[in-house]
Length: 186
Image (cartoon, rainbow, N blue to C red; front, top):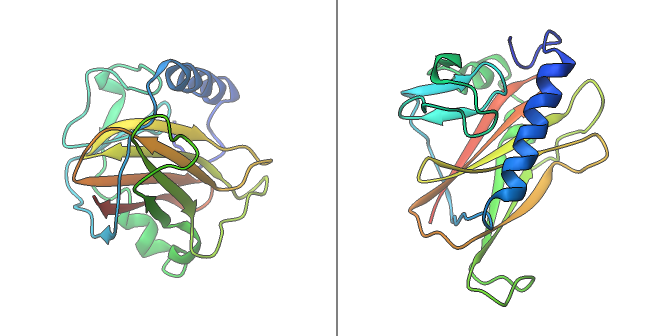
């Protein structure tokens, strides 16, 4: 299966979406904190060939999104650089923009950081042929959460974090332009 192309079966995609939704519903408050963009390293990147989840450092024993075994991960250290090289002017509408509020006004009952994420300084379109499939969030390269986007949604979200870390990373998958990411220091 090659993500970003039309050869993803509806069954595979919906199955991964259902598992991801269940994982998110059962998980804790999503925990991320960030400040500024930094240039991410491009080594030891693994992509799940079932759901498109990206792991940094080494492939996990089981995919945290779709629960596929380690064998379903393929090393692809160029997953981000290929999109940047192929679509040189697309960064303005594909690179995740991260804004941090150290204190959440929406969830004041517990100490947490509010992280707003939008795809692109120029907002990414959400059309049938060209949209963002998902946003994956990481703290210190540890997977935290996935948000699936539908055509009726905007390519933006807010995460609430109680975990301390030194950086946050957001990865997104565009149906036409592939994988894009942004990192921010805590």
